[in-house]
Length: 540
Image (cartoon, rainbow, N blue to C red; front, side, top):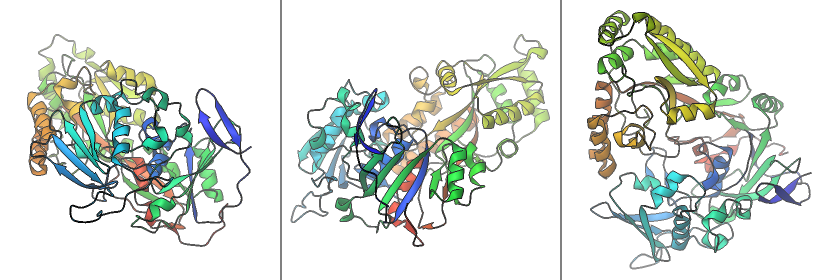
């Protein structure tokens, strides 16, 4: 049975709909693995199926261009006060002082204009104490006041300057008229989540299920109201997402010509995708694989020992040996694609000298040399086990034994949060943000409540991150982040290892595929308006 869903909570009920007729318009079909639960960006985990579809349905006030720069989307202009505390955003449709609007209003899929009231309504939901989504999102917007100044103008007032606030204004906007009267606590189970109204380039055409329990297919169609303001032709009239059980089933579908594309969920899928008949598009994912050194451990609090570990680990060789063609080596705590990135000088790798320095340092502690053992926490998946073993083998040359503590994801995250490790292989995920702010990862104030899992306490690093976060001047921020990266190296805070390769396998008939800076896997669709089918085909 195929059906159009009306609501999804603890159970799912459906309204029967006739089988689709053959799709005879240019269509792109992408495979997905896993579940679709809700087509609402606020319930979509980063890089999830829901996030990918939501990115085609909903928009924020601003977006990114191909260079990672923030540009208007639903907005048409912005004013920032000199003290960095006040922002006024004019939406499309705002009249100029001496004439008509610079741009016509953006329209929701049902034809109504996107207004300041929609922005204020969305943010009121996010800052509600009962908002059932990401607590960090709720806590952030509770620090920001927002008011509608006119039909197409919104004023924001910040408690303190925040250089990354423009990036925060990329948050998706929901239609107030479709959700009027809905409280934040009710939104999670609201029918809107499976019958959404957005302002993006595509709108929901239908949802299908083959068993009445799981969504097996999502079909989007080009939104007529968006076409009027589109700068691209949007030659693909329909986007279809089709569910498969596992990667083997996806590859079989690709070989059989049933699908046009698949986006890798993790770099461990890359080698299998290279064997498909599809073209492989690759770019650096917004992730840094890092070897954390627990500063609360007696030995690792010692700068001499941290430096000895770093100077014994030839990262490019380790990565090439353990994760060939899956990742690129990293040398800094910021993404190599970021405007704030500064290449770090490669440490002099000398295992013999590192061993001598380590032994001299450890001699200051009352430990038997035969008991020099540290526990390495890692996710229990094959690529991480291979990398952990390679690192353990390198450290063995220092007479240092690593005990590998491989755990499933849920236990791994709990151990990180509890700082229950000596060393840890982690992936710091920057998905969803184009700003280089890494305050949560390395500031000393984030040890208890943030993501500073290694308990790094370095005042110079903290000050550099504080200044960079407050300074809205891009030139000055660059200098602050350069100071942060230099301090990171000098203090041997942790050991950057790699950034994964994001792999997108696409049928050769799909052309015009391009993207700029990839701040999340769903950003692959940012330029979908330029995609087209190179050949006439039967659209199944």
